[in-house]
Image (cartoon, rainbow, N blue to C red):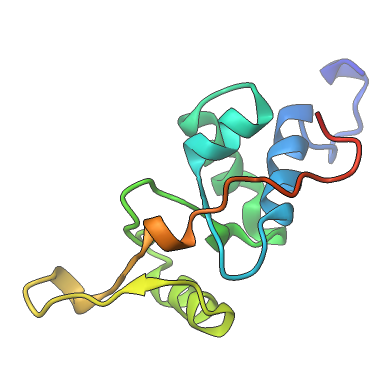
Length: 121
């Protein structure tokens, strides 16, 4: 379907696919923006980040993260609540860390997308 024939409220196809990928990430696990792009075999981290910024509110956005494990600026406390509720591995912050916020433990929290949805290529 071309963009011109889409209903005004329809998401672009790439956005739909990126959001579907976010929904597949299990609780307590995360994928980076780049991981999602690689999994989709299209776009890159910036495109995935843009999709999440514009449309991610209806999916578990906190599971799509920066590669360095830093919590999403402006949404740190809300994300942290989700991570703690889901048991996502965190690295506690040192006293020297600005804001004393933990980071994600990317080594332990990162999901490789191994359990792909039925029929997804």
